[in-house]
Image (cartoon, rainbow, N blue to C red; front, side, top):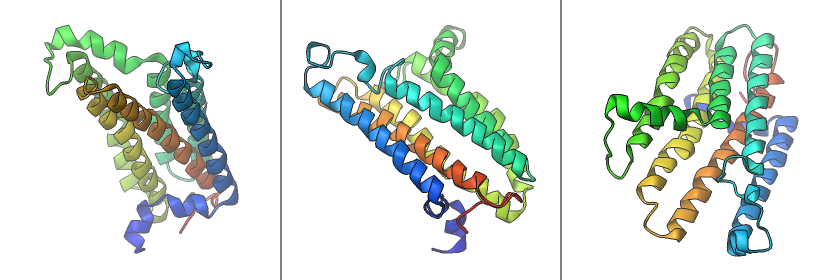
Length: 236
């Protein structure tokens, strides 16, 4: 792998640190346990089966998997602050704000509530199978994203090349998170009426993928925190 590709790849950083590697294995194992429980519950009849507790679903607010994701996002925010304190650049602090927003948005359903509020004032239409409130949710995700990512891009650009890898690798992980949490979510909404099997599969991909990516972010930040105090990311 050439140096340019390596600078963006978070995998060597995680694999190269024993604690980060173990953290990833434990977190992903728990993720898959929740995913399997979700699937088994559905196959056994859902609320009418032997596992009626709705909190076993991974696609519902207040579920056990959702709470587990909140805890991981909180840990990510703390780890970003810890990396910032040990390093010499501001990027980890801004990344902490990005993931703090993600936590607040998830826990408080900000994109859903504010997205609904924007429909009437902005006259949002239904487009390509997306409802007006879905467009409102996209606006709610995009606006804070721009406000946080523009200064983050500037700070990263001013950061020394070796320390810049910290942000480059988080950008890759964030892109994966956006793919599952936003892109797959929108596709899911567009085809939700096709069949219950398609609906169930996309729900599993969307929420399961989001959980695994958040675990990967957490593991990478463990490795970044254990890197040299100068702020150089691990996995050179």
